[in-house]
Length: 254
Image 1 (cartoon, one colour):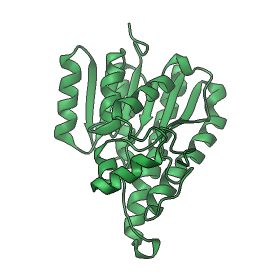
Image 2 (cartoon, one colour):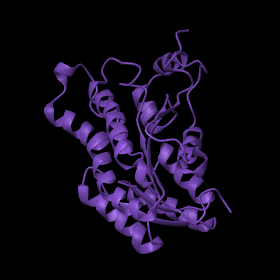
Image 3 (cartoon, rainbow, N blue to C red):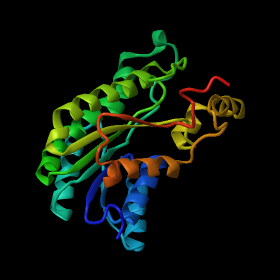
Image 4 (cartoon, rainbow, N blue to C red):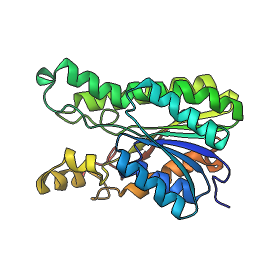
C-alpha cells in the first residue's frame, strides 16, 4: 500500500516535466490520477503507461485557461473514482519574455491566465469536492522567480507565479479548518522543456546553474517527490506555506 492509497488526485500540466513525473509517482503510491494537459497524444501515452504498470489513470486533454476544463477534471475524478482528495495544480508557461515595454497586452494576459487564472479556476471547482472528503491537499507550483529573485525579461512570468502565493495563503486561511490544506511548491531551476527554453544556450544554462548553491538544476522527479510530501499525511500540519525545493537559489550569493 502506497502513501496515497485509495486517494484521487488531479494533476495539471501532466504531459511533461514535473507534472509527468508527479503523475507516475502519485500513481505508484496508490493514487487514482486524473491527468490534465493540452498535449493529447502525450497525455494518452502517460495514461497507458500508468495503467500498464498497475495504476489507475484517466486523461483529460484541454487548456487550463478554460474554466470548463477545471470543472470537467473534477467531474471525471468523481465519476471514475468517487471523489477528490488531492490537486496538484502544476500547469504553467514561461510566456512572454522581454522588457515590459515590449510585452503586448495579449501576451501578458496569456501568461497570467495560464499560470494564475487557471489555478483560480481549478481551486474554484476542486475545493467543494475536497470539502466533501473532509481531508484534502491542494498544491500550486510557483517559482523562485518573482518571489525571492527578479530576473530581467520575466515580468509576466514572475508576476503570475508570485500571485499563486497570495492565492494559496488566502485559501489556506479560508479552508484549512475545514480539512483542506493549501500549499505552494517553490522549485528552483529544473531540467524541463520550460527550463531549457528559459536558458536555451550552454552559457545561459551554466549561469542559471551557478545561481544555485547546488551548482546544478533539479531533475523533475526531485520536485515531484516534494509534491508527494505535501499531498501525503506526512504533511498533515503543513498549510499556507511555500515549500522551497530550489537547490538554495533563494539564499545563495556564491
